Image 1 (cartoon, rainbow, N blue to C red):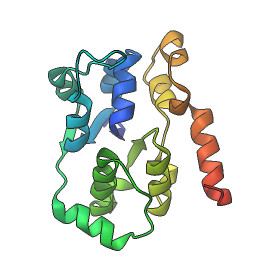
Image 2: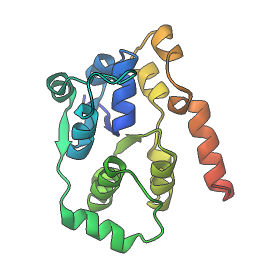
Image 3: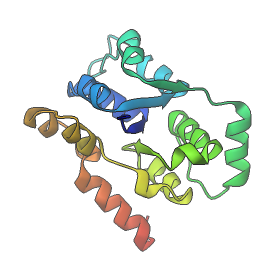
Image 4: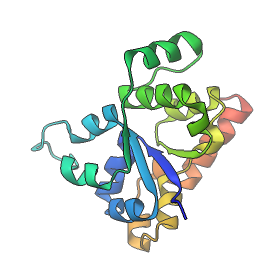
Length: 171
């Protein structure tokens, strides 16, 4: 039986490494991302306090696929969806890939903890595909400590609130 596909943004990947649930996610799901998110996860000053180290090799070994996003995909998204919110590069690349591959978008779960990216998924009619890291980690068998260590924006409660705000038109 094929594993469920999940497309993760940089913030979710970094939080999965921070809470030590990365390996469980990769064993349970076919974890995918875009190249820009790989680069974002592995960038930054390794000596900066509070920075979460994401070893490139470990990240790549866990991923089922890394999607390339072309300038044409980015331009098409921008021209076709002028009502998208401003997005960070990784999330913009994810949305461009999803927009360019609608058949794959409907079978792929998306995980992000970025409010603008969730708004973008709403504009692209994919908000029901968005799932919290908490739900993914729980499904993958992460333990209570790992789930309890998640920052609030990675929880079902937070995601539910954002979805409700979108549907009510207050976000």
